[in-house]
Length: 81
Image (cartoon, rainbow, N blue to C red; front, top):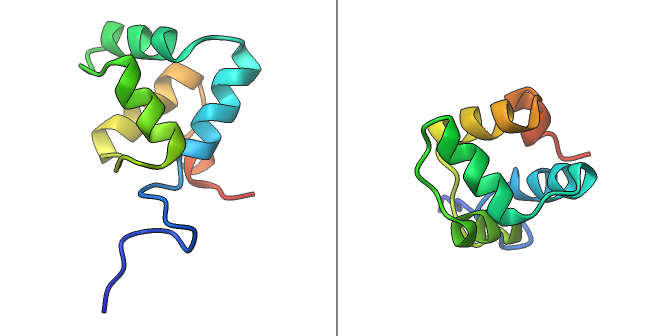
């Protein structure tokens, strides 16, 4: 049977990297949401929190926007190292 979660139960693999990048930039989850809204992605602080904690799936459109906000590639967001 197909399982769409990680081995540790997360709904995404990018959330860990999103949290690390956000903390490295010393910005809040609200600021990430604000920056995403500025580039046209309607998302709120709670959605950012759920992405980071792995409780929420992330769409390809959201991955593109997150990569733009953090000035990284999509591959970097998906890298598990």
